[in-house]
Amino acid sequence: MKRAIIIVLDSVGIGEQPDAGLYGDEGSNTLGHICIQLKGQPWFSLANMERLGLGHIDGVDYLDKTREPIGAFGRLLELSKGKDTTTGHWEIAGIVMDKAFPVYPNGFPPEIIQAFEEAIGRKTLGNYPASGTQIIDELGEEHMRTGYPIVYTSADSVFQIAAHEEVIPLELLYEMCEKARRILTGDHAVGRVIARPFVGEPGTFRRTANRKDFSLDPIRKTVLDYAAEKGYQVRAVGKIEDIFNGRGITHAVHTHSNMDGVDRTLEWLKEDFEGILFTNLVDFDMLYGHRNNVEGYGRALVEFDARLPEIINAMKDDDILFITADHGCDPETESTDHSREYTPVLVYGRKVRAGVNLGTRKGFSNIAATIADYLGLSTDIAGESFLGEILK
Image (cartoon, rainbow, N blue to C red; front, side, top):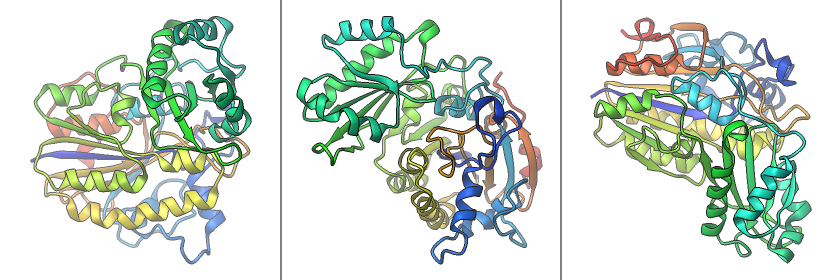
């Protein structure tokens, strides 16, 4: 019963890529800066990921090297243009993007905002790049008074709509996002339209877990499509279903936190099925990376690391686990945006050779190619399989 389990630690990059300067990300190292900052704190330990081989990855000289790592390990270089969530996940699944999704450092052009306002029948507020918590603090009170949704973006390819749940009910907010998604096509085809609901009173606003992403269809088939077409199950945990717009997904569950995501992953691991289990743990990025919260990020890493033995113990004999990331989001830099970084790949399974150093692999898509190889899928996805290097 062959299964591939992919767990994406959202934004846990491990050092700047050679092209980081093109993205303004020189010096970024999400995991490295967190580890250096928190080294010596009695609560900070990533012992279980170190046991898999995290400290043996090229460039990871800020963690302990285990004498006998139990997994295979390496780092991945992103080939796609961009550094956003959609691009990273699509590449993990086998798509290399030749052209980056559009970004809007000066806000969206008048024709887009006008079309959106006409579609929803009301004016909007904002229309500039900002952090999500910052912009609701700035415009939340006016939003509550006028009923106008708050539109904003970031350095990523996103059209975000923030609204108080008591002013614009969730279903209406989601409808607004669907209308924006239909408008944002062609040259303005952003990677994601995101609903960003919040609650509370001025001065105490807080975002809720009712976020929803509205993505584009993947531009080509992914390993998920090929697996589903061959009759395998493809189970998605967290925002994976949204990122792929439901394509290639046979079962999906959305989550409210990293630990909820781990719980849902464990529940499905204990069931009998063949195929792919694909999990995104978003708190690292959403709650800590984008808010430059080093300690919060570190505690979230420790929390996941503590659950890793449960995941390993729930795995069946033919399971292969891939732990990776989709980009960086260094909380130690001035920027609150994603960063262009290498990502880790830790591979574990009872049939995986321990201690294999995969080195630096070109393309997150090597994960997709390896999974396709393992499941016996005939595909035209990007990537080079490393299955022959890791199987016993």
